[in-house]
Length: 325
Ligand code: A2P
Image (cartoon, rainbow, N blue to C red):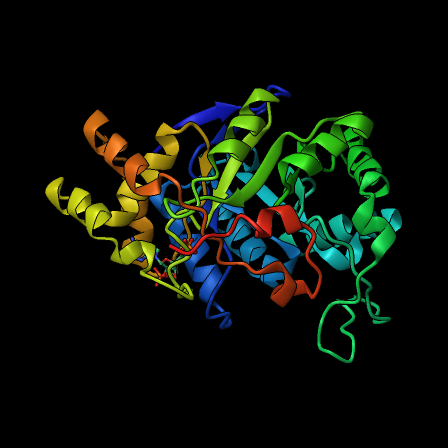
């Protein structure tokens, strides 16, 4: 699946990216998965400090390039993200240096602010998030309510060429509107949860209208998480019928649906056969596309609950929209 898009700064981005968030987290799992992905033909890797496996991704990229001299570093699009505890401007610089070191790269193609939430770090030489007595993140209110200082630091990395594009993740429309006021470089990307139970039409349309490329994480419906009510995306009868009828996997249908909607899709898997089959492009007929849209209609079920995850809700207006499936 060699489809690409062009970002607002002219940069080419492969439409399908390989997610490296390792659910098992065992040593070697990421290395093996990324190696299979690169051999399959994926040329876009989605990473993050938070996944704690940038070292393994870097090893896999280095070894793959060594064994395949016809592929250049510039042929692979690599994204990583700054975690919540490193939002202070000087920490953003530290964070990208640290990620580049682990990835063994001179630059990343895209650097994202992972969440619109800033939290305190611990005092270790390689800092981790500081957790309070309640086990939750210690929130930095000023930098959570005003992202301008963090974004200034992101712009500096961009201007220096350490990141060839910059963007945000999990930003809502009000947060993007706020950014428009102070950003000298508008975000090139907004990476958000999108699948048929969270089509996010309004946010996707808003991003397109501003030249911001949406990227879909959990495009398969976050299959390792069980919704509190109702069925999983993978259990939906209509979606499964569409897949079976065409002789395709449900994952292939969900990826094709996202591509047809015009944004980047980031499937992840640590199973070699599924890594391969997810990369095989299929044609979604008009009828099937409309049928998936119909399943998605009116749904707004998010798997991540801000209050539970961070102890602080950065998007109360977004959380209020959460409907049961
Ligand atoms: P696995 O690694 O065993 O393949 P999401 O990105 O929506 O959160 O979904 C990721 C989950 O979907 C992973 O747990 C992954 O498990 C699973 N997955 C990935 N590809 C497929 C597929 N083709 N069929 C079924 N499950 C898949």
